[in-house]
Image (tube, rainbow, N blue to C red; front, top):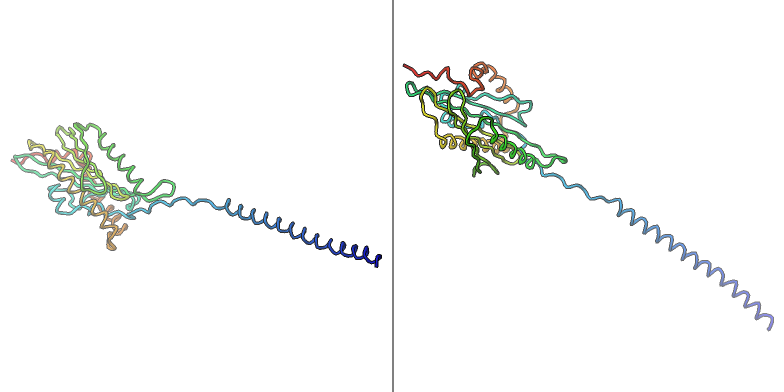
Amino acid sequence: MHRSAPRLSRILACAAVPVMLVAVGCSSDSGSDGKKNAGSSSSGTASSKPSEPTVEPAKFADLPDPCTSIGKKTIEDLVPEAKKKGGTAGGSSDLSVRSSCSWNGLDDQGVKGSQYRWMDVGFTRFDSDQSLGSGAKRATVDYAKQVAKTKASEGAEKVAAEPAAGIGDEATLVTYGLSKTDEDFVYATVVARTGNVVVTLTYNGAGYAGAKTPSSGDIVKGAQKAAKEAIAAVGKTAGSEDSPAKGDAKTDAEDTKKDDADAKGDAGSEDSPKSKATPKS
C-alpha cells in the first residue's frame, strides 16, 4: 500500500502535462487571430478614400438660332429698313457653343435726314467640367469679363453701367457715346447670364444728313426689349423638341455669305451708311 502511493502521484502528474499544453496552445492561437483581425480592420479603414464632389450639370445643352432669337416685329421696330430682315449670322466652328447675328439699316426720311440703326446679339454657352467647375460658374466668370470689355470699348465717352433687372439670372446695362463717320452714335449694351449661357446684345444708332441723334432712353429701351427676347429664346431651345437643328443653322449661316458684299459696303457694318444718307430732293 505504501509503494502504490508514489506511483499514483507520478501518474497524476503526467496526466496534467497535456492539459497545460492544450491551454497554452489555445491562448497562443487566440492572440494570433486577434492580431490578424485587428490588422484587417485597420487595412480596410486606410483603403477607403473620400470621393470628390461632382460638379453641377449644365442647365442648357444647346443654343438658339441667333437670327431668330429676336422677333421679326422687334427687328422691324428697332432696325427700320434693315438690309436683311433675317439678319446676318456670324461665323462659328460650333453653333451649340458660340453664335451671333446682326442687323443694320438706314431709314431715309428725305429732307429730314436719315436714321441709322445697328443691332448685334451673341450667345456663349459653357459646359460643366470636373476640373474647371460647373457651367453656371464658368458663365458667371465670362459674364464679368464681357461687362468689363464693354465698359472699356475704344473711343467710348460718358460710359455708365448699372444692373438691368428682369433679364436672366443677372444682367448689366452699359451705355456710352461714340463719335465716328462725323456723327454721334448712342450705344446700349446688355450683358446677361441665364444658367450656363451668356448673352451680349448691343444696339446703337445715329442721325445722318441733319437728322437728330436718337435719344439714349430710346436706345436703352430697345436694347433691353431685344435682350429679354434673346434670353427667352435660350429657355425655349432647351425645352423644345422642334428647335432648329444645328445643320439648318449652319446652312442659314452659309446662305448669308451672299449678302457679305452689301455688308462690306459699310465700314464695320454699322459705321458708314453715308452712301444712302443723302436726302431726297
